[in-house]
Length: 292
Image (cartoon, rainbow, N blue to C red):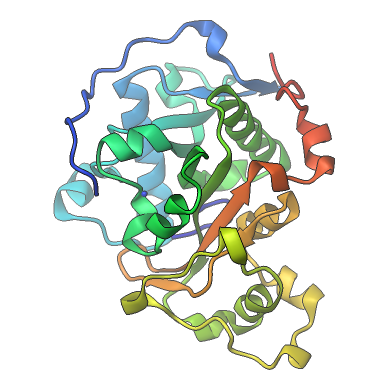
């Protein structure tokens, strides 16, 4: 599922998580640019507000079809929400409570939390289990449900989302991030140029190889390699996926159609060691670039 700054995002039995969330201190601010700040959600009320933002983007803008209860409540909500941390971007110039100020969000799921509960969201579409088994010593983090309200789709907002992700990954010793990046619509052929470019230039190999699940696999090799214009392909790509590539990410083999969210998904894999020096230097090795 995707919008301009959006990805979708991940079954092991375990204890059910508590939905109670202790209030965080005001020192949990991960970054600020002007009137915008990024931090984790501090309460269930803030998570509810983030789910409302997701509904506005995914359903009202992108025509996703959620379960009846979610549609009735006008919230994009699922069982993974109770497991995840919710990264927020807030506009502090908006009058009202913090939940009225949320303009963007990301859902973050850490490896140990996923394994102790429901697993990773992306496992429903991609063979993530094989990737994890290949790296038993590494800690993974799934990025999902990213969205930004239309009027805030700016460089500053995206920089703060990445600032938050980077700071969170460093804090928790994450070795690699992954999650679904999405093209709008359920017809891969409409994105033949971009998907073919990814197939020929960005598919992960060897130890980082991962594929769409066999029963869902959609071929991304839709054009002859010699017919692919790289510049046009990148221009045709959703900004989020293009941004991941600039960071040093690769993609899994094969796409998956998500009919509920009206998208065509690819799996993004970003080992921390692969993040380009340009972006490490920009955000700071200690995530101090936009720290408060």
